Image (cartoon, one colour):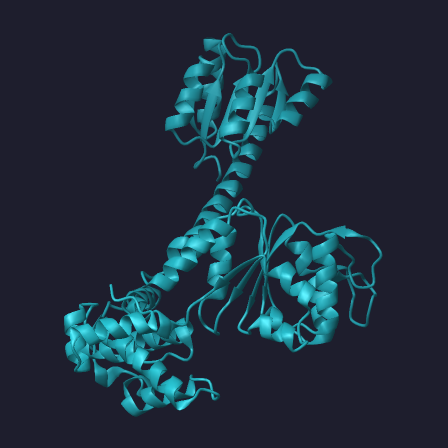
Length: 460
């Protein structure tokens, strides 16, 4: 029963009437606080949890109308029932426009009041569950879930913080597995649209024929199999955010249609003629260099500039090695909690291998390795022997590092890339103590500092 969980606040300056109402609602199973002074009641709201408010209309100091306006402004999730002995259609309409949940005219039958309170309590309970779900989503996908202390990830957080409150479209680029959708969700939940939907569309997941229907929706009978009208992602995202993943994979025809929507802010369902307003913010992601795609004619320049108002580039995991211990701990703890397993530690030797690995699959691969080790390793400490072959094999590590280098690099450029990678690995291993890192590399501290400047590496 909703009544067993619901906390009611009664406000009426007639003390005898208040006592009768309080007894009636307590007998119906509610927790009731009864106050005869509306100013005291509003102060009570600042310090207490209330599910439903029932207020008289005509009171000294503050009227029920003024109480309603205050609650709608500061506590919009609490339904308000207004009671009055001076009922009229005009005043009822006025109160409902102000946001009253219900309007009850005195005298009223007890059953009438209890039913109205019961409905309001159900509404409050549903809204409470919605708020809890939304808070859990914010916690799961908010800025705090972007883990790291490296310069690259701090720069990403700064950009997210600046872009989120605006209406600007954002293009998020980075290798596969770097967390582009997590950044998109963080932008959404830090934006004024956070109470609206976050609708995601992976543009690689649908063939050309299905994609148009997925994005625009379709009318009943518009094609074989269209047995009912269906809203597309553009329509579902109304009032919120639309995340277009792998936007670099759009066909030329779909690029033209997306550009039209971004310019005109209207669209039609497949097979329809009605113009539907497009009220959403676009966040797009790609693992391609769209500037290069524009130059070779594979991506429209005008669409590129529409999407690329704010550009956030996510660093690969090998470019933020100092974040690996933090990320690993996060994923291992999450896997332990999810699978009801005891937590494990990582030996220093195993951590060196993990930090030194090139991680071609980036964060997604690290999460996979962390969960696999948590499930399969019997001991309470993760050792080198427990690591997957691709991580602990030094030859594999070197081969992965070479495979990630562009084929067109000269020998000198290749050697410089490898030298820079070894220096970063030594710094992480030495916990960024430069003297110790120089010892690992077998060079002097002054030579290390010269190479840090040469390659633009932070030696903090």
